[in-house]
Image (tube, rainbow, N blue to C red; front, side, top):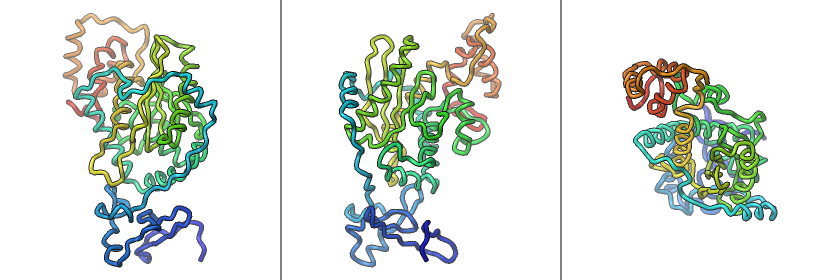
Length: 361
């Protein structure tokens, strides 16, 4: 029987074996496991090397020799127009490992681990693994499917929205509602790849960031958009994130000198066989989110009126009172009442918040 979709395991199907002649991969239970160019030579080795990755998906065992392991045969990087590369060269961009000015703190570490936890939970979902594999097959950014783009935006939401949510985990929250609550934005068109998530943060979804030409072309594209926005408001720096699920980079456009500084292309998702959830890309984007939240006095979604009343008590005393308030919702209400109160509450609002509690209190 010819089928358009591969069968799924059920009570009557214990194992599924698929031979992918396009990518030379041997699949087990619909997941890539071995390279067709070098399969285990004995029955014992074949069975011994079948296992699961760190997130519970069918894969090869960690002890499997490298020559037998499935390796993502990502498509050839798309050609890049020389004029775009010339645009990048004309930027005279500086590459730096640190494009931010916010020193690390205890809150920095907690926010990063908070993000790592949610990304790890996402990676355990079967649909996420399938969409990741689909992403690897895209020949260019315009070929990304709607499901892959949804996954991309969900990952961006996890790492670039303030870590403060009330009744349900952000993994199950509707993306549009999540960003609306945070005062941030998604593109109007689901296929749009370039948009402003915050007033000072531009996002560009790309592919093949491990290829130098495609990396430079992506930087040139997002900087062009940032410069157009910067011409309207040159009072503060603008930031950009070029994101491709596996890799990411942060771009900074300085407000005073219009200098362009960007990070290298850093790993974002951990390896599916990783023993640690940490990656340089997650760390950098979590720090960027903290930096932007710091500029927004804690949370861009809390917008107090401009004509708010003035405080009659010393700021230090008001902060001590807020620290004693057990209900986070009461702190949010106070921060919405006055821009001064929001600034006072800023150290509290910067803390990760989940399921009705600030994690550091």
